[in-house]
Length: 164
Image 1 (tube, rainbow, N blue to C red):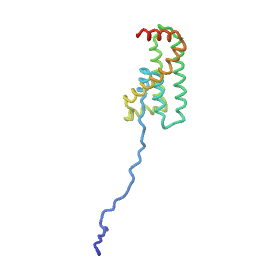
Image 2: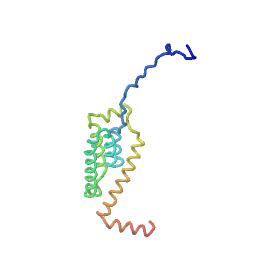
Image 3: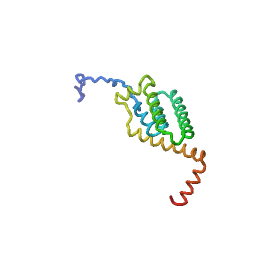
Image 4: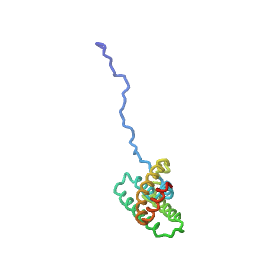
């Protein structure tokens, strides 16, 4: 030990090992959450949740987006041509069951499996996204309603002039 130099010969040698690699799994919306979003909020909300579940597979997002737009257009057409007495809740139930079934069976039940493992998105996030979808849906549907029935705009202007 000359010149105050210490030998580290007996010091324990630390092995630098990398931590085991674990795949970071995105949290997904469960089929139940997708069905609830579709029923309570809109087909757009259910479609957005399905679309978000496919972050890791961009090629499969386009069919989901197209399917969502088609469903929205069908709902708009049905709402225009169905009698006023027809309970629209049956259409909503059908949409929710369809969205739930699609999400449950899609990709061999991956969404269900991940949700059961605790990788399910928060219900609060689902509600927030769904409310944004309702706002977007209203921004789409209200002009369509006023275009289909322009006399409603006149009635609305009369109400506004009277101060409600």
